[in-house]
Amino acid sequence: MENGEANITNKWRFNNASSNVNIDNNNNVTTDNSTKKSRGVTVREARTMIMENLNHQDQRPMLALAHGDPSIFPCFRTCQNAQDAVVQAISSGQFNSYGTAVGLLPPRKAVAEYLSRDLPYELSPNDVVLTIGCTQAIDIALSSIASPGANVLLPSPGYPYYDVFSAHIGLETRHFDLVPNNGWEVDLDCIEALADANTVAMVLINPGNPCGNVFTYNHLQKVAEVAKKLGIMVISDEVYGHLTFGSNPYVPMGVFGSIVPVITLGSLSKRWIVPGWRLGWLVINDPHAILQKYGVVDSIKRIASISADPASFIQGALPQILENTSEDFFTKVINILRHDADICYDKLQDIPCLICPHKPEGSMFVMAKLDLSRLDGITDDIDFCIKLAKEEKMIILPGVTVGAKNWLRITFALEPTSLEDGLERLKAFCQRHAATN
Ligand SMILES: Cc1ncc(COP(=O)(O)O)c(C=O)c1O
Image (cartoon, rainbow, N blue to C red; front, side):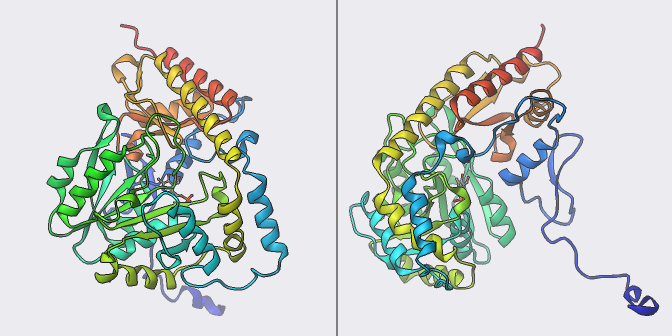
């Protein structure tokens, strides 16, 4: 480094390959790398941007109604059985080694048995790949279908990570509508209109994020039949599996695996309220072995073999978590979520500038449409959320980040008194900004 050697070249060839995300003066969400197509924004990135506007002089607690992680609230603490399972796995000294590419055998067997309880056929451990949360299951599923020219159909509104990761690996995305006035059901005609010879898969999220809907058995069967007709597989994100509290029960898409090949994605994160434990799964529901025949299973296993795997002790704890968690714990969580959903839906009815077309029946979210004509000085959903953060020290996700401009995605999975506090602040904000004419 002597004699200024470090300065010999001033033209380094590397740059920021992933580009930074900004909100410009017109509230457009953009990337600052003009040579790249905008890749969208993840929920985490959007939350961080909104949080920069919080007023730290405000002495009230910050309220986050923007993400699906209620683990900080005592009433959502995970069960003793799950905690004990992790402690025992660590204390046993048996899980200090590297894992295997697809995950250790006993936890894969446990996932196969856990999911088979709700299926008309038996899964085998060979159908299961253990992943670092459902996030890595998405990465592996999308990577396994990303060949040159291929495209995937995504729901809109949807979970933005699918767009972001597809852009990252160069997989084309096309968006089909979920219809708000029809319980957020899939617009099946839209699927048929979008698909072409290069379409390889469609993604479903059930129970839904961001819409809080739960698809009926009949609707899922229709989806399966359309997918079969088009010759595409279904990637079913069931990270909120079993978190339902309305009239529609949770039906796993794998039930229709005999009609169409299904790749199911899930994790411990939501049902056990431990998103920080980072344990998920990718499961092949394909009794006719079509994905095997077409090389998709090999592709999945190859990608898993070159990816990081979940920590061995979490894998070691998984059989006990899946087999021994009491129904009481699940029921308690569902009862709180149902109560929260009621509070949220009822309170939203009292806020004239917010229209909620569908009461949430599952997951942790509800979508509400902004009626901007009833507000003064608010230009759009991002402006609304930024001003809300500044004035009320609370975070809500602007709909544009989930593909629904001028909507809001509200998380109701909070300790109920905090949720009520948040909705009162939201109401006060809307009253203060109510149009005067
Ligand atoms: C629809 C959906 N899929 C996947 C994930 C990621 O799950 P995990 O935290 O298990 O990685 C989330 C997280 O919020 C989600 O909402």
